[in-house]
Length: 205
Image 1 (cartoon, one colour):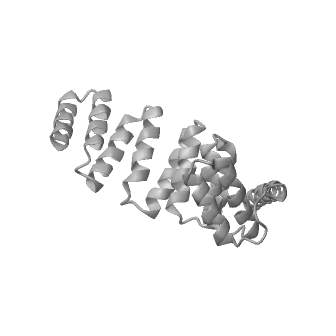
Image 2: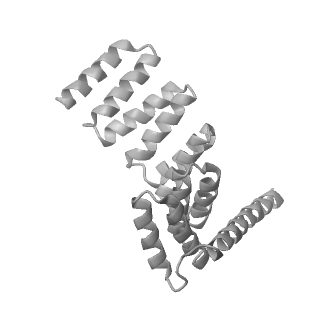
C-alpha cells in the first residue's frame, strides 16, 4: 500500500510539473509584460476575466502560476478561465493542483466537483462535494450541487437529504422548496410534494 501511495504522489507531481512546463512555454510567446509581479498579473487577469476575455486572462494567470506554483488561488483562477473556454480536462488538472496545495479550500473542492460533473464523472464529483461539505457544512452551495449530481444518478432519497439540509441553511429560498417538491414527486410522495410547492409559492408572493 505504501508503494501505491508514493507512486500516486509521484504521478501528481509529474502532472503538476508537466502543466507548469506547458504554461511556461506559452508565456514565453505571450505579450505579458515581464516586469509584472504576481499580484499585478492576477489583477490584470481578473480584469480580463470579468470582461469575458478568457484566453487573454489565461496568459496572465498562467504567468502568475509560473512565478509562484504554490499559490493555490492562482491555480483556481487558471482553472476558471479554462473552464469558461470549455477545456474541462485542463481545468480539472488545475483544480487538482489547488486542492493538493490547500486541501482545506472549500472553493477548490466545489469547482473540482463542478468540473467532474461536466465531464459526467458523477461519483467523483460527489466525492469532491463531500470534501467541501466537511470543510464547511453550513454553506448551501456544495449541498445544492451534490443534489443536482445525485439526480443524474437517480438517487432521490439522497437528493432529498441534500435539499433538507439546504432548507435548514436557507429556509426562505423558494427555489429549494420547488426542488424538494420535485424530488418528492420522483419518490411518489405527492402530498408532501404539494405542500412544498405551496410553501414555495407563498415565499414568492
